[in-house]
Length: 601
Ligand code: PEP
Ligand code: MG
Image (cartoon, rainbow, N blue to C red; front, top):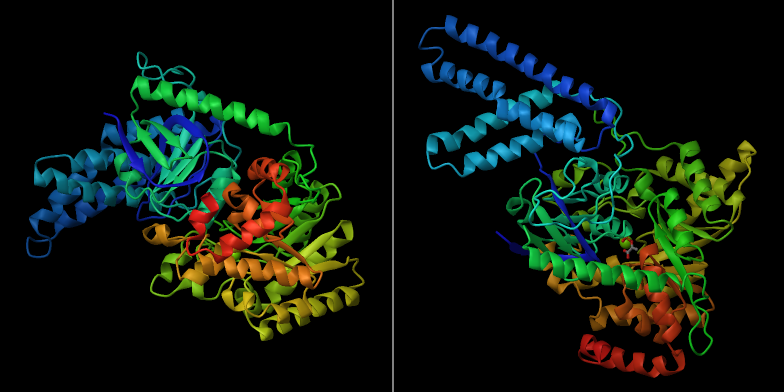
């Protein structure tokens, strides 16, 4: 039966494919694709774990049998018997084998996937006794997952070959690509994915994403957008409503997922998909065209990246530099099998920053120092430990760095050394206080002194601060005394101005980039920088949203930093703009009671 699920649009386009459901189990498990020659090893890991749990249960059964009825009630023996039966059940082992060999899931992922398939069958049972067996099955699977800990091979090997383009679903034939399992387009559906998980999936080739939670500028959404595939967040119960392997359509423009689409709907979306491809082809012709307005104003279109390897996409999209390298992604998802996080040392970071500089082939690279905390925990779990606190208002970004000077100095030394290989701008996130500015600058001096003592080679960097907190936007003079340029992080500026958690879909309707207070802070920052002859850029999602290009140009902005996938669409707006005409119009938008209406008009 066809039905639709609504969420928040994150990345544009249409994806059509089979659902890959990533379920959250009580045990945190890794999700990654294995190589075809690892299928047997993974199946063997599951078999070994099952045998070990079976032995464990047999021993328990034996000791229960020796106890008297007062020590061990009859129900306990019956329960252990049920666990043994569930463990040996063909549906469990057959399903796990299917996910490993047909979909190349790692063993833990296959096991939790099959658990979820069977659990849904239990949920649908009329008989309350049978329904309750779901909890037993979960316990059995958890025992197996515990047994499998530490037996995994290398994490995150290269993904299997999969077609990125969505296939067309022919109703006559349930699986149009049957016989070639690896070429089925896959879309990822999950309750939640941490930015670190997303980074992991970035290496694979999903055709689209849907998550139950998250706001449009949550970091999970940002990474999804950087992958340039249709994505929806905040789809509430999507992961409950979709089943493994369902055919789904993701409409990333409208924020709608259609499950089990009829042939007519498929034909309609197939058409839309082709229209999108044509539009992309048309935009691609702008790649080598300089971004200059009709009245001759040169506009700098820069890229936001998460990893040094993203520079290839940035160059391909025609970026003239990197305006925001979110360096924290180098620090994420680095847990070892004992769940300890090892941060990258100076050499590893230096090599990564150098790769980014080289990747940009002489164009400048703006490296933002680590910004973890809030919705970007270093590992997938630490955010939940702090649920009772307000992580967005807590030890995040520069606050985190200043609380751990040794870690911060390591990063600063690595960035300074990489600056010997090309133009690097050093950008500091989330500053609000003059005391933080002072501490940061003295640590930068200290890092230089350490390198001098060591006789290490390093380069000059331009220093910039992000304007992400209203307090910063209201004390620009202090910032401009110390920094060469400012970069407006509208994602956080909106969050902190409007008191809206950017990662919370429940308040996503109030997250308003066109709120007069937000626009005033953005406009004042641009004006003050220009007045003082300092560089100013916008690197939040607003910079890549074509609905705001004309307004930002009219406010005097000449430097925009965004995901590479947005550059050509924004360039098209720039090429059509006349800043002489836009300036008075932009002032009118600022003065309007309802800037959103004025923007649209
Ligand atoms: C921002 O806040 O706008 C920004 C660019 O930084 P991040 O999205 O990484 O918080
Ligand atoms: Mg920010």
